Amino acid sequence: MGRHVSFGDDFAGLFDWFTTRAFRLETLDQYAVGYEEEAIRRFLAGKPLDPGFIARWLDQVATATGAGRQMHRVHVVTEP
Image (tube, rainbow, N blue to C red; front, side, top):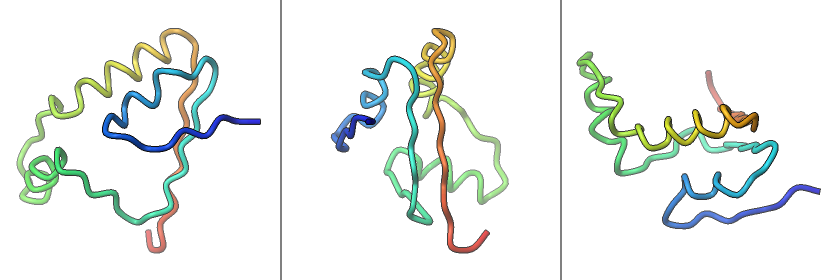
């Protein structure tokens, strides 16, 4: 049986404990988080994005997958 971990202030930290596989099911159309607001605004304005705002997450994914661990995500939306 899988382990359930609740959200805290450090979302990325939730992915530090798994040893084989992590699965995330997103059931809301949107997940608005403050640190993404500027990037979304720039994207909608057609301006280039600076991936620095998610650099820590990208490093964490690279470390996990480089160690042979798998990360999966499904995002269910009401309207594509």
